[in-house]
Image (cartoon, rainbow, N blue to C red; front, side, top):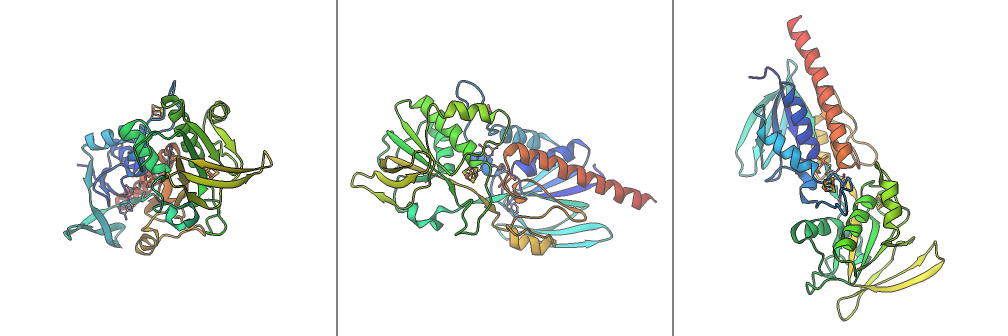
Length: 344
Ligand SMILES: Cc1cc2nc3c(=O)[nH]c(=O)nc-3n(C[C@H](O)[C@H](O)[C@H](O)COP(=O)(O)OP(=O)(O)OC[C@H]3O[C@@H](n4cnc5c(N)ncnc54)[C@H](O)[C@@H]3O)c2cc1C
Ligand code: SF4
Ligand code: SF4
C-alpha cells in the first residue's frame, strides 16, 4: 500500500501522464474524470501519418491509457467531480460526487489539476455559418471523421468534396472576442490533416486561409515546406460565408500576399477552432483557491495543488506530457517535505 496519495483531477493526456509518473514512483493515485471515459480531447484524434509518422502525437494517448489502466497504484473514478475541498494537518479532504448523485470523501496528500481546455465554439462566429450550413465543420469534427471513416465526405450528401477550405484562427488571435492568444496547435494539426486528405483523396483541392503559420514543433518547418506543394496557401481570413443552391459554400476575401480578391465556392469548410479556458475554470479556481491569468487559464501551482496540461494555456500533447512530468516532480518534492516534517 503506498503511504502517500495524490488526487489527479482530469483524465486527459496530462492527467493520465501525471498519474503514471507518480504511480511508478510508488505514490497512490486517484484519477477523477468528469466524463464517462478517459483520454480527454486527444481521444478523438486520428493518426495523420502520410508516407511516414508526422509526429502529431495522437497515439500518445492510447499508450498513456494502457499504462494507466494497467497500473495497480492508480484507481479511476469516471463521471465524477470535486464538490468541496478542505485542508487540515497538511492533508486534503475532497468531496467527490458522481453524476448519479452518489458522493464520498477522498483523503489525499496533494492534488494535480489537469482539467484541460474547451475548444472554441464557432457558433460564436456567426458569419461562418456553423450549424446553419451542413458543410461547415470544425477541425475536431474532421479529426473524428478521419479516425472513424479514414476518408472525408460532405455531411450534406456523403459525397467526396472536390474543394476543401481550412479557415485558421477561429476563436484565436481575435481582438473582437478578446481572445488574443495563438492556440499553437491548430496550424500543425490542420496542415497534417490536409496532407493526409491529399494522400487518400488526391483529386481534392485544398486551400488554407490563414494569418500566418505557426511552425512549432520538431521537424515542422520541413513538413510545412512539403505541405506548400500540396495545399494552396492564401494569406487572408474570409468574412461572411454564403450557402449556394447545391450546398456549396461561397467564400470571399482579399489575399494579402497575392494582392487579389478571392471569390470562390468550396464543397466543405473546416473551421480550425482554437483552445480556450476550460468550462470549469472559474468554479475550480474558487474551490481550490487557485489564481487564473488575464487570459482565463490557470496560473501555476500553489502549496499542495499543482497544475498540468492545457489547463495552463494552449499546448500540444507533447507539451502536456512534459508539463505533467513537471507537476508530478513538484508534487513529489512536496510529499517529501511533508514526510520529513511528519518524521521530524
Ligand atoms: C482541434 C484540435 C486539434 C488538436 N490536434 C493536436 C495534434 O494533432 N497534436 C497535438 O499535439 N495536440 C493537438 N491538440 C492539442 C491537444 O488536444 C492538447 O494538447 C491535449 O488535449 C491536452 O491535454 P490535457 O489533458 O491537458 O487536456 P484535455 O484533453 O482537455 O483533457 C482534460 C480532461 O479533464 C477532464 N475534466 C475537465 N473538467 C473536469 C472536472 N471539473 N473534473 C474532472 N475532470 C475534468 C475532461 O473531461 C478531460 O478528460 C489539438 C487541439 C485541438 C482543439
Ligand atoms: S505520432 Fe501521429 S502520425 Fe505518428 S504514428 Fe503517432 S498518431 Fe501516427
Ligand atoms: S496555431 Fe495557427 S491557426 Fe492556431 S491560433 Fe495560432 S496561427 Fe491561428
